[in-house]
Length: 161
Image (cartoon, rainbow, N blue to C red):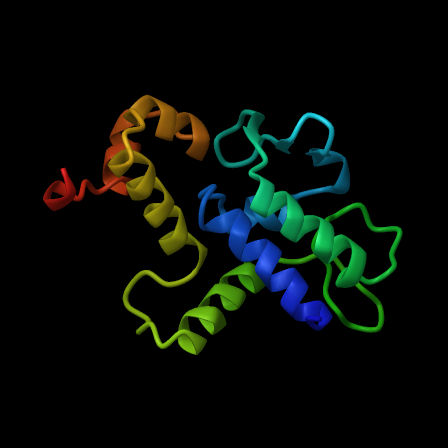
């Protein structure tokens, strides 16, 4: 059994790593954005100025469900991720970045120039491309309007091809 912070952090990391969400998208996520029946995750218009819907991978959905059952403090707040303080409040994007940084340090991964959620976003883009996704598909998942932006994010691992 994990403690509440561990449930929360695991769910956040699983939203970031495979899906490439922005820290702000994770922090802004609301309970009504989770479509359990359809297995989808709605991302409200944010930086990309348009709403998008992504599939909710089973592992991510399971981590979110565990957090909601065992880690999220009781609250009327509609945001998914809350602080664990006596008076739970909605998360700030900087808190998401700190969770990633703590996790990297714990794993013994040196913190370089890019640390935090943005690094996981770039990793997700590279993994998608290296697994055969088109730049258009990756752009759609990440919410990029320009394929040029996606090209910056998605580094090809040519040794694996």
